[in-house]
Image (cartoon, rainbow, N blue to C red; front, top):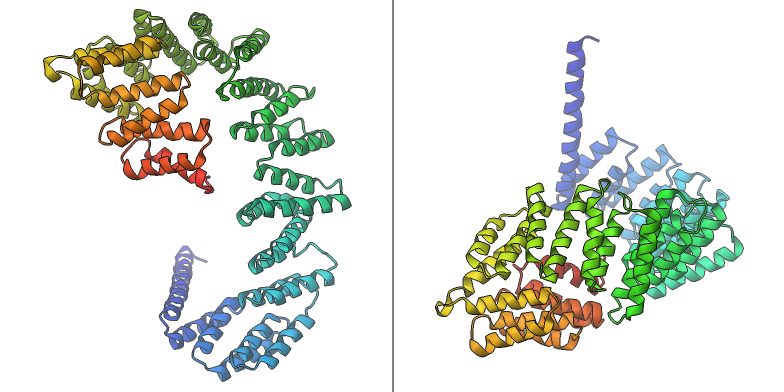
Length: 603
């Protein structure tokens, strides 16, 4: 074939395909607009061109039924049955025709004959069952699959189809039974079946039905790994991670999986705040002799984090518990040294010392050693210098703090780390009462690539602009910035005194809402939770137009969610935030948390 002829052939094929697609769309358009005669004409041609596409024939018959042309419909159906008696799904089409004419007995006879004459052929069985399914005759479709499975001597071959049909009927126990059989039939597709179960099982009671059925199946086949894996999944869905861990450890030992399955459970439990289970899982992983070195050290690090979080997130820990965590950090660092694999843990240890043990000088020494290492990453070094600057600031060493921030700013001119350092330097100017200089820096940071820093810079810029020069003096703002510095430095008594002094010396000053907010922050740091909530509430209720309002609302919602465990109140406050403060930087996160608390499936 010459190139010219070949090109002409391609043009012909492309034109034919395009025209065929147009006809298909045209037929659907006619059908939807009620022009059944025109739709029937097009569907008839489509089926004539592609007789294997039974969907075109079904649509053609639907058009004839819509026109109540029963004689033509019966003629066409019987003609197809004569042409190919093996396509027994056409008997269902014929039965439907009889039913439309109120010939119920004749219709039932046709349906029963179709089921009676099922051949032991997978495709024929599926086609017949699908035809019944299409007419919402789920019981007949189920009968077809069950009889087909018996004919083929394979109980699970149509299990997933049967599960779907029982789900349509609303029979959850039978649906579950057949999904379990489907998992046994095709264990490689277990992820797909889990996904289906996740969509259909909405309550703990339904999950318990699955669990009970799995126990029954396991009694008959205790070595079936698919059943055990599915049972593990049930416990995860129910957030019973300790039970899921037992299943995972059992499978790990039985099949020598070297901890991979247990590591998954550990991560899920950790991320959901079940630190007890996470600790058990990571302790198990660190005791497996055959575990690879990467998983071993990662498990060691995760174990440390889980133990730390279990203590510090309880909000009522004792000093001895912090000492125990400190000792474990030291043991880890002594065992593995300071390098690229341990850099994050060393940084976390320093932060732990500073923020929870209040050992600022100890934290600074750890960070000095970390930043002196040539084996750590550039980002960890930069973040460590920023933290070191923060801790120097907390000890009153302002010069050391600005020196470190400036080093990071100079070596990271672009990106989040550099912008963070610039923002912190701007805050130092603010703390020092150099408001015009701070204002210039905040103005530059308004265009920061980080939205968080950009918004914080805008807030600070507006805050200074609103409060500087009022009453021809900037004394109140200087007093307030000093109070904020005292807060950063954990000098809480001095901060309260300074804030009270502003209210006494400058009554009804525009800083009043900021003073209330700052006192709320202080009470939160001191764990006076009820007082903190009272003050946050006063800010967003009494000063809804001020820049602290959305911050106060978000902080109050967090306390209700994480510390008081009053999830209804937390949900209510998150909803108020994204509705009443839709332009807030917290709005997106508030909406997300609201949906999670409401029980939405957030991916």
